[in-house]
Length: 129
Image 1 (cartoon, rainbow, N blue to C red):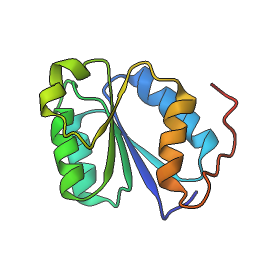
Image 2 (image 1 turned 120 degrees about the vertical axis):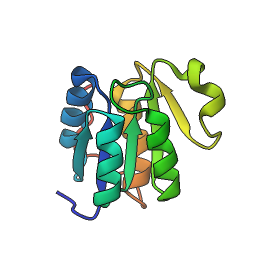
Image 3 (image 1 turned 180 degrees about the horizontal axis):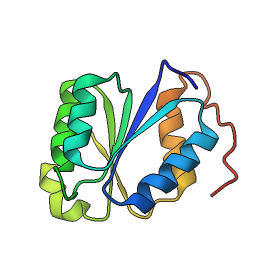
C-alpha cells in the first residue's frame, strides 16, 4: 500500500462502504479507511493523516456536512456521494463535487485517481465495474 496517501470512505450503509472499499482496494495502491458514521469520521480526521474523503451526507451518527466542513478546514479534498443532495444543496459548498447515488464505480475511480496520482492516473485494474 502507498502509506503516503489515505482515502477515507464515510457512509453508514455497509453495502456502500464494502463495495467502495473492495473496488478501490483492487484498483488503487493507497491506504483506505472506512468510517461508518460522521462522528467516527470526525475522530479519524482529528487523529490520522487523510488525503481524500468520499462521504455520504445523511447518516445515523453524525452529519456528513460536518465531515465536509472539517475536511475543508484541514484542506482535504472531499467528494459528497449521496442520494439526498437536493435536500442539502444550499449547505454544500459550490467547490465540493457531489456525486449522486448510484454513480458507476469506474467514474468514482476516475475522480479519485486524478487526486491520487499527479502524473497520469495509475489504475491497477478497473474492469470490475
